[in-house]
Image (tube, rainbow, N blue to C red; front, side, top):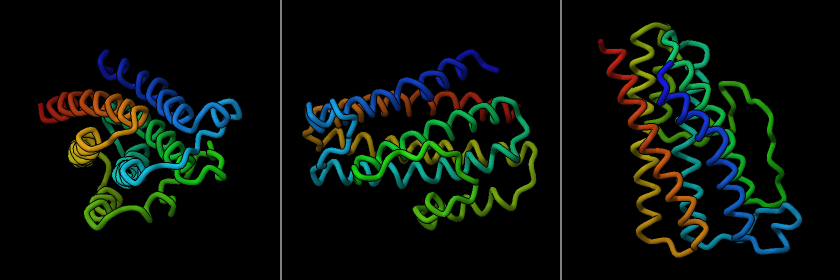
Length: 198
């Protein structure tokens, strides 16, 4: 496995979800942070940012769950594992932000989880259907990686849009961290795609 992939995976699976939770706990105020309730009342811009991030992340999550069973390349499998862990954690955090009464599930969900697939737009649904129908092998791996590149580009645009208009300090910090992580994922995905083409 590429050294860069391993380092990014560790950062993705551990650092970002913890920072997201901490940032929104601070946003909720001292009482909420002390009780562990990180579900602050979000402003309109923050609510849109969370909803857009969750929707775009759902496509990445659903595709990565399929890749866990169909990918053949070791780097592709590794990326899919870390992407599933990261997106499930981020989805739990974003859902808890929108509905503070709903605790994070922490449960492993099936590949065709209706909670995730129900959030897909037509483009995401078409990509997932294509991956579901594809056989495993190099063609599948390339389709998955190219879909991840496209999805991560969409996630990057969401972060940048919020950074251009958002006012909440903690949410801006989360968006900056996410933007950096997404850029790193895009670099890794480009490396994996190049290796698959060789």
